[in-house]
Image (cartoon, rainbow, N blue to C red; front, side, top):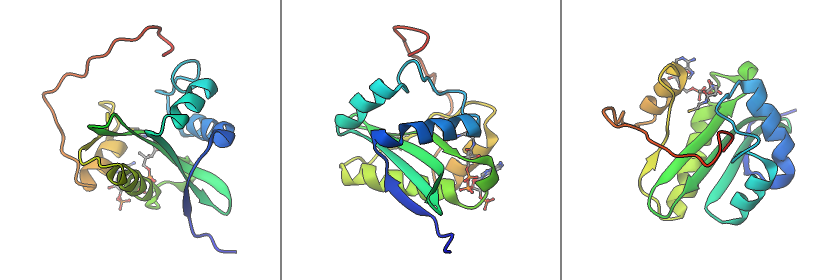
Length: 147
Ligand SMILES: CC(C)(COP(=O)(O)OP(=O)(O)OC[C@H]1O[C@@H](n2cnc3c(N)ncnc32)[C@H](O)[C@@H]1OP(=O)(O)O)[C@@H](O)C(=O)NCCC(=O)NCCS
């Protein structure tokens, strides 16, 4: 059997698989009761500006990334690879696919938010040519803590 990874756009029917993957990957920023809930995702995927991308090996989902844009700037969100499959270049492949989806939508500025202690992610994005926009403050307002 070929162990070649394949990449495809995921649909809402894949929701349980990508949620299980995020949990197994320890992605603690996920908000299952807010913007990462099933209903919320269903709405977001219908909007045409959100693409959930999955990487599968032998039919098993081992990595995901959510590419979004607001018509002006693109965002790489919720990137995660299962622990047993890391350092195989899968995150590189997922980010490349997210970039290509965003470029096809006419987006030429792409950004990601990385938590301060996440050296693996920081190294990954630096390697892929992302500049560290240090000195910026990230501010936000939530209607609910779960959002
Ligand atoms: C960050 C993460 C997605 C990387 O996935 P991955 O598939 O292992 O990454 P890749 O194999 O594509 O790595 C590409 C490069 O990124 C860098 N990198 C990846 N993991 C690293 C680590 N643990 N330490 C240092 N550099 C790392 C390296 O430069 C690596 O190249 P190399 O293997 O040739 O040295 C994965 O560790 C993960 O799922 N972490 C938990 C969730 C998370 O933090 N997501 C990011 C949110 S912003």
